[in-house]
Image 1: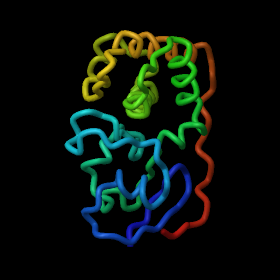
Image 2 (image 1 turned 90 degrees about the vertical axis):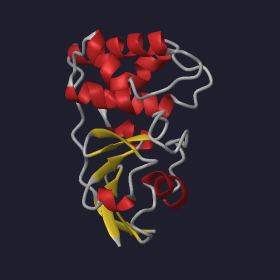
Image 3 (image 1 turned 90 degrees about the horizontal axis):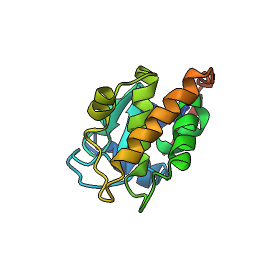
Image 4 (image 1 turned 135 degrees about the vertical axis):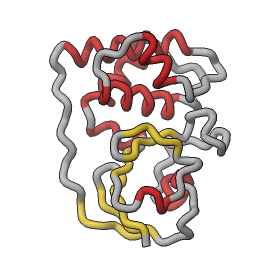
Length: 169
């Protein structure tokens, strides 16, 4: 039994320890926002946060998140940085087809949580593992800069809520 936290809710999950976190999130906990892209951690569509670090869930075994906190795109609604990034994505009209966007937003949010005023080089490094077949890279950069500016104007970060009691899957 693997015990961890998803979007600030304690959960327990019974499966083979090598089951990819991506499929646990999508199939067992019905969180479809995290996308399957390549299955090899090359495209970034499956990005989630594990203890605040952008992590490719397609190659992360569920056993690796034992006792850790996992935040998916659905869980960003509880975080000021996520709100700022999503608002900037809309303001800069980043989305075209949209398939890669959850992973892009998760990587951008992890960057801004770690570094609220990133340089272009910082953005390039943080976003380098996210592929966008529509080629919206320049708009992604501008959206990250916009979110950074919004946050630097004093938008307070929300403190995580206490996790709820364990839910079994």
